[in-house]
Image (tube, rainbow, N blue to C red; front, side, top):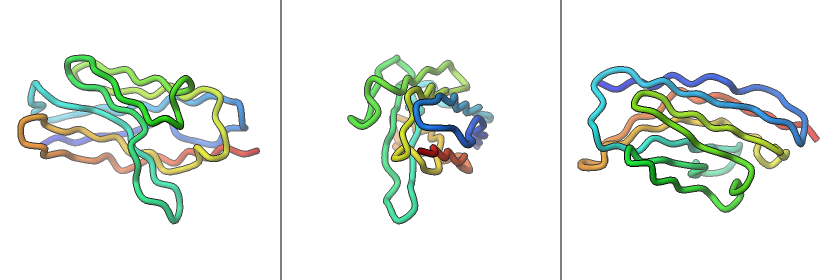
Length: 115
């Protein structure tokens, strides 16, 4: 059973940076996608960035050029630069098996950007 533990959220001023990390434990199927989603109050959870085990990346338009995703076999990181108040949300790590679509979520880490 895969478990995900996130860290790195917090409070930062607009224009600042944060780095989120997520460590996976358990049996990890070789072909998978790891990524970050976020959910702001009153909004649906949305994709921020993802990266396949083969290295393919996908970014939401809102974060392109500001956020960078990286990963290895058991961890995924999100470097967030030039943060804006609209980036305020709870950020969730995700892991998904490519063959079955079965996935797990982390517990979430809050990010607050003050203006």
